[in-house]
Image 1 (cartoon, rainbow, N blue to C red):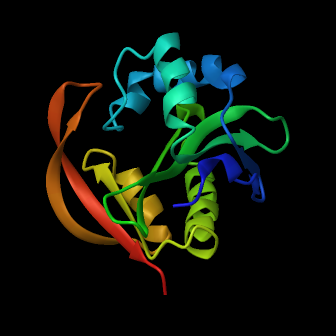
Image 2: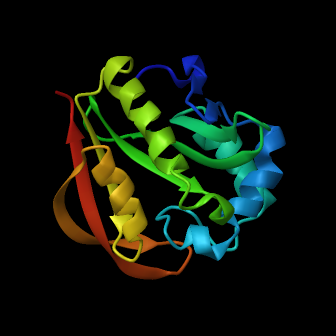
Amino acid sequence: MQNTEQRPVLTTERLVLRRPQASDIPAIVDIVGDLRVSRYLARIPHPYGEVDGRFFIDEIVPHELVWALTLRTSGQLVGSAGLSPTDQNEVAELGYYLAPTQWGLGFATEATRAIVDYGFKVAGLTSITAGYFAGNPASGRVLAKLGFVETGRTERPCLATGRIEPSVEMRLDRV
């Protein structure tokens, strides 16, 4: 994937996707610190505090194509989404989360569609993978709307719950 310092601002009908910054830490902690969110994310601990938010900004954001999802109308941060590198050069893994108050409004589909388009058209990816915990079928519906197809089922550890959870693996190939 390309240098993440050059990630552009992406704009959709209702969202602005921009680089996360230190001033976002309180909102990120509020969203990800909610177990309703973190229980569906493999790599997020619970509880999630300011130190975790700082680590995200300082150590993850510079190395992954990750965006803060903000409302165009107000600038309110409502989630995050991005592409993480994999062991294959032209393949990345898509991940995303939204504040529970924003669930069911189509923001996840809107944001991830823009990121998938960026991944294929600008970053030169040939495939994008994603996985979701089987207990979160809404995430599966988001991926299906984007054209992802199931490639298998496995189990993944969830840091927030401390359990191994059933996971559905998905993939979308550039056409």
